[in-house]
Image: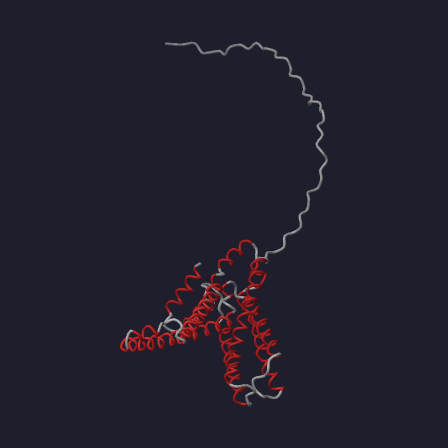
Length: 318
């Protein structure tokens, strides 16, 4: 629960900055976690390279769709990616924790507070965004405030209520826009961190990320292209993401093994040296008691007394 409390506290500390708050809620932050700065820089570089390539494609070739459709398509891809990551992450976590040895299984289960924080933050912000949008639509359509009764109370009351309503709607719209921006950022960070499965173990993001990008690649084959680019350029662009993510994930797994000694066997607690097979001791013949004669001793010689004269003393003289 320590990781969960630290994640929530970091979100509260950065609440004034939506970007920092979304990153704090959806990025792995478990204490003691192996973090390689070279891997992080390469991942950030790959993300920026993908963003630059996407912008270049939009400006280099004619658009096959309107800008609004492209924007909605990007948001839809993020939502679909979050759904795929959520399903794949849940399956991977269940299998990983289930295969771990009992001493490690409980520790991994306690680390689920990290993924739970990312998922809960995203669902809560999405619910607030959807509920706020519905409420604003109801208010704008005059389905909640009885404007007719207010108008009957007089022009001054109606004008005052209308001004307060406009100010409140403006504040609510800005707050809703901030929540929507936070929700989108939280979804992007959750997608990049695979819903903080790295809090459970460092190997899990590298194992889930290739499955995610290849799933999105397959879905993109059934969608209309956004730009009218030549097939060679278009499919090279579409394959660039999955291939780069897969290569980087494989290199990350190798680097974790060679530099930090992090392996899947060690993560599951199955890296002990094999024990030699049990060999039964040889069978011995049962003990049989035997009657043995006692040893023979020579008899003692009979005692014969001898007469000895008392010692002679010198006479006493005064």
